[in-house]
Amino acid sequence: MDPRAFRQALGQFPTGVCVVTCMVDSERLGMTMSSFNSVSLDPPLVLFSIDHRAASLPLWEKAESYAINVLSENQKDVSNRFARPLSKKWEGARFANGGSDAPVLRGVAAVFECAPWARHDGGDHILFIARVKRFLTSADRRPLVFCQGRYAKLEPTESVAPLWPLDIHY
Image (cartoon, rainbow, N blue to C red; front, side, top):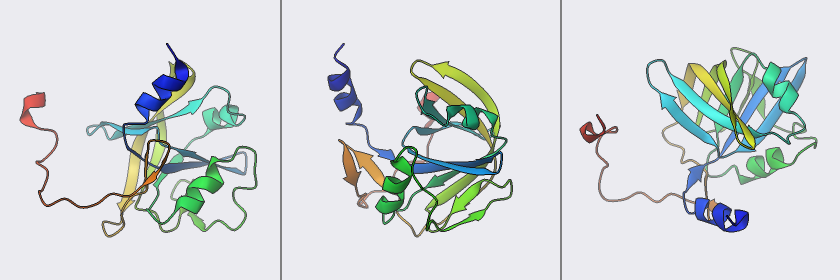
C-alpha cells in the first residue's frame, strides 16, 4: 500500500483540531492533533492517539489527567504553535490550570477534562482512552476544521441534522 496515497485518502475526512494538554513532573505538555473521537456516552469516554516516535510519549504515558481543547476557527496560530515538536509552545500561551491541573486554553470551542482510562497499541500510534470528568462548551464558537491537508471552515446548512445516533444503528 502506498502510504502517501493512503494519507491523502484519509485527508478526505474532515476532522476537528484539538490541542491535548497535561502536566507531568511539573512540566506542561501540549500537542496539536486531529485524532480525537468520542467512544462512549456511558461511561463518558473519548480517545486521542500519539505517534510512537513522539519524544514526549513517555511523559504522556505518566499523565494523571488531560485537557482536550477543541480549537475555535480563529485559533490556527494556536494549532500551529502546538504542532511543532520540541519548541517553546507555552511562551505567550493563554491558559489556566483546569480542575486536574491540565492546562485549559482560552478561547476554545470546547474543553474536556479527563482522567486516563486505558491505553492500547494502535500500530504506529498509542491510543489513549480517557474518561471525561467535566467539560465546557461555547456554542457560539465554531470549531477549527482540517481537511485535505489544510484548515477549513464550517458553513451552516439550511437543514437540521437528525438526532445522533439514529435508531438504525441499534
